[in-house]
Length: 277
Image (cartoon, rainbow, N blue to C red; front, top):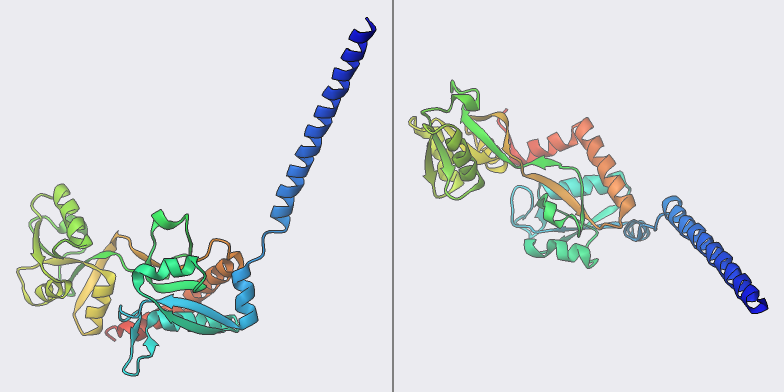
């Protein structure tokens, strides 16, 4: 009887001990979570930028007018100017690091650069590896017509001939429209420039499906073409940053918003695409 009583008391004490231990562990976990919320991990990328007074930006200088090398081998372009103006707003200098396009995100993840600004399209598949900014340029597919065209909407494309670059995203969009409007006829060209020229000079071509970069470049060279309607297939250009660079991400977002409001982004587009005035 005595042995049974002692055994019962032992198990009761052990039970109370386990409950107390679980409660203590729960408190520790809560404190850890709260500490992470209240005291987030430091942004080492931003700290290093502040210490060195430099923002290292990766680019592939082979895509004018966003990035290219001038006659002296110096990087110039829309993205270069954007990076410099953003850094200036933070009181920093920019160090441009030239890297092949396919290696840009690898360089970011290995710490060779702090950010990538290189006509970089948003890619949802890579959001686990890097953090993207809001778009600063929409390079997607537009429906384009001559300035004197009677076409004002997609609904007016029945029995029309639409120029596209063979195998391009514009071609894909055209095929999608063709399923909705079977009488729409696609006329395929080997290059985007050939498709643009066809719309400019061939009255048999009624419209064009082309990316915004090609369109703006053509307009800058004097093409009397305009885009109508909304973007047909979005392809936004964004800035890529490390996941843990939370302060840098906030700074980039706020600065892009400011540049959008005060016209800096429009000024850069005007400068580098030289639109018709």
